[in-house]
Length: 509
Image (cartoon, rainbow, N blue to C red; front, side):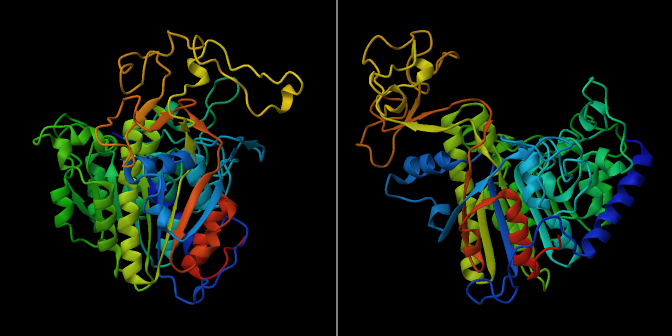
């Protein structure tokens, strides 16, 4: 069990965070905006911010082509305003750019308006705690919600309602390895004076009351006393965090929430955790037998719709809701193109749920973007192959001007490495872990009878790596004030723009 002293410190720290939020102070440079006039004269009451974790521009394009064809559109692409977001982080203890971000740094950027180091949650690069937009919204009287298909303690949701020196400090218990950064010599840093920063994220969430509606995975991160703390604050807890009479994490003690539980939820404050870890990937869930417990998990669209239903009308101020489609990133890390595409579709269904509400409501801003691109997802020409499959890179044949040749040649035979190119990754080469060949997928434009994993399928997809890249990500927006997001911007700018939408004024520097 956790140290009781740490719990007391966490509660005190949470109270301090609310006090800071009640002053409505902020962390970034001002952005223009007026609560009564956001581009079209309509008052903004609600902001719904949707994140496709790891979703780059190619993820969007491939998702469109896979499910709707070359001339179709995803729901997010139907939103009237589009732009781009630069995602870089900074090095710890400085303002030196780190060109490839992780989810923690990126989420802190839009939640708190500051660039920070990779793995940081709700702190700047100098380990100073920074107030979050969700904390400010809650303190100002807005209803708040946080939804994810990941563990709710994971980086993206965590950055809106917790503060930690390391994203791995999720719980259920504290450890130096998970919660304290290391010095250059490999020793752990000294524990900070602000003990919130080394309090497990699950413990912070259960006690600070920052989000009124919390839906996602991660039940194993919580303990029975967390449920008791939530219920004392008036939360309806779906499922069970465990029997307080049994040792923490006793097998079978915890009970995940189900979609049926969510459908029946009516509380003003609701917590539902539907898996002990991340929620089940949609494609994998579809292949399970009818009685499998994972079949009882709600989709992201269902969680988004229910959270909107629970939050709408709860406060005369309005609400702020963050919704994350986390598995786009996790399946991109795995270079699993089929599941990546299915998760893009699942996320886009949640975008439709949010946008449908916004169209009915008339006072809701919807913002759709990503924290970073993952794995260098690419669409290549049908029938071609990648450098990774080659014995050698393609030769540049313009001897007169080799530096500027736009048309390097590749031999049509004999250039593939048979050990690295053993057939289409989701077709003939599916069983070979060393295979660098592309995955292929049929689209609605393909002739009848064309199948995934065949050379005839028109959508050919490859990955550059198993990690994040530094590419800019797309952003789409709808509703009053949406025009302000039609720009090339930093991820920290999103904080100021959403702050202005909620509060009708620029944040204080």
